Length: 289
Image (tube, rainbow, N blue to C red; front, side):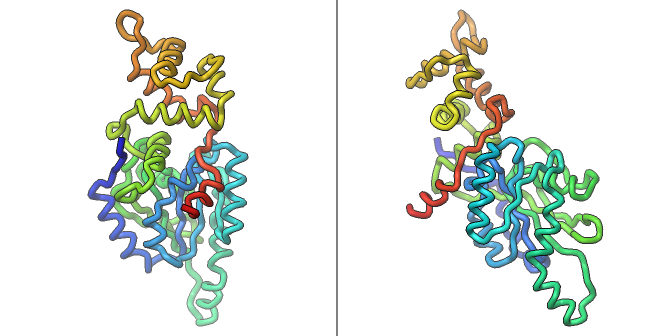
């Protein structure tokens, strides 16, 4: 299965982000803490170039805390500012303005020296669909300004939002890149809900999830589906899980569609506990390639 998704409004969003870049002081790049590598759009690097940036690892509550610490340490080692947040509950958001002031201190000092009146920090939020941008904006603004939804592609236009007196945010639609060079990136995005399910083969996505859990979190997989061992054959693994969870069709046969949907849903809803699908060493391997 080849996963691609680049609706017309995303191409327009790329142009708009490029045009509005000169209006902002800093970029807030929102990534999914479960897939910090795959949810960082490489197209964004091309667009924002040398603009100061804070990487926000959102949905940190859904990610493996051990892995999140590894990612924060990795970004620090690369000289990049990163903060783990949970925009749904508001955790970690207090660090964002402080980090912005730190990164922009020299710029604002120069402005002050020229006699320019102090003003709010102007920031642009960018990220892939369903990363939680609108929820983050609403939390920062302390009111429901940005439209939210649990499906990707909700935000379609840009808007300025004031956050107190110190910060002004420019929201942007989520942008996926036109082609995934590595199809595993597409799998991870699909498994975590960044791509609409109607565009996916959930059988392949669920099997990818099962095999990942078998490798990285085998105890959780076995416990969830009462497995003494994890079958190597695809049909057998679906049969065992489907029978145990009652995903049956007529005649007591396993309904593979229901089973696949169940596995994907339970991975996304933390029934397997907090999961992270990438580690910093994956970044090093990708660079070597």
